[in-house]
Length: 357
Image 1: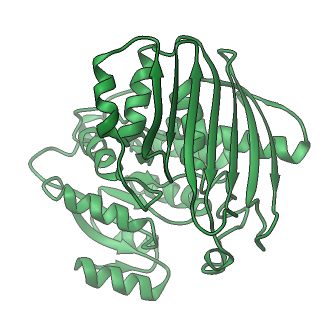
Image 2 (image 1 turned 45 degrees about the vertical axis):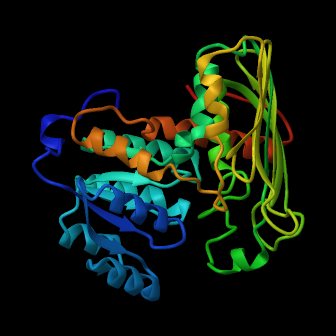
């Protein structure tokens, strides 16, 4: 995947990229919004959902044909890129179907619920010569972009400790709204679903992880998977960290935060979804410090506002003008951490990475 698209797969600038949204549930709204913002480069040609009511609503709202299954969609519609907003456990089969039909794939997080399924997705898209994009829109949040630059520039010196908290709420009604929610096969728990973007920060922000040790619990919700978890992390650099996640916060989402403590600086991003810079202090002063006040933003959504920026990179990649920011292999990094955490919680010990060589 480290190569520019082959010429026969490049979508030239003389036409729009034809896109279909598969799965018209809650996260799809962010994708429809991003597609509309990029209407100069993208054209929505179809929607797909197994729920007749959702399908009819999306088809009427966006004025495009609706399909009840992906086979019909890929057989009958002319699609360059399929966006998978379906339950995570369905992503692998759908991605493989797209690859077989020569269609590029964008999948919501996590890319899969099983490690081997993630590997199959990457392999299938490689062999078919199509792109596999894994959505990591939070990387485009203004707060996280500023923190990432600071880490990359070495302002912290040695990083000593990292703390991530995800204190949100998902009532029983949320899990009862669809049969697949809260299941191992199709969803995953608080770590894999709700905290997935925060687990992504462990590798993307700080660096390669050496080992993890986790505990999970289902304390209140009537679901298969965990509603609460804690996870200790050791990076290859020697830094230590922990992640605390719960979907039982009363009465509403409270905090999505990351704190980085280093040799020459301390930063805390907080708010409901790392949308506020709550502490920013370094030994030296640099011009970017003036951007701190403007980087924070108000939000009631845990999804942030990064989807349009993410789509911009996808467009440029499919045009042959860029490399993907988060392709399938990048998506495997966070999936590997999630699977390692679940293995640790199941077996009661430390799990070292990589999972396999």
